[in-house]
Length: 148
Ligand code: DQA
Image (cartoon, rainbow, N blue to C red; front, side, top):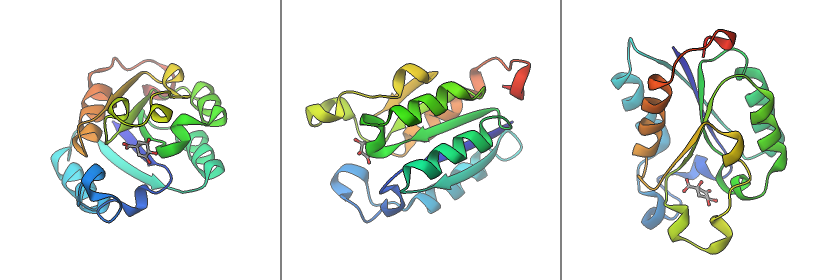
């Protein structure tokens, strides 16, 4: 099973950025522990960009060849119809993830442009949200196209 984690804008600063909200662990460290945990079960690819179009390119690239995508689109979650369209365009199931509980935060973060195109949403469990999303993908039945 091949899973791609895609992180959007400002998530390259995890560990440094607003640690009271996002914690003080670097994503690369967490990713290493995730890969160890899922060794032999899932191959985990990782992509991060601060650029909306590059996130879309990555969804197009991996969305036809992997079995599932874990997507934290950062602030583009709340604004990007283009990312929602990209998710709808690909066969791989996408789980929307947020580190923080966006519904306990400012009203502007309560609406997601992408949720309706996603298989499901996990928010508010810190970095563990990514593991929970992987568990959700592993529990989904694989369909013929894209081996998902
Ligand atoms: C976030 C929540 C978004 O509102 C915010 O813009 C982010 C991170 C989260 O993981 O909690 O950049 O997606």
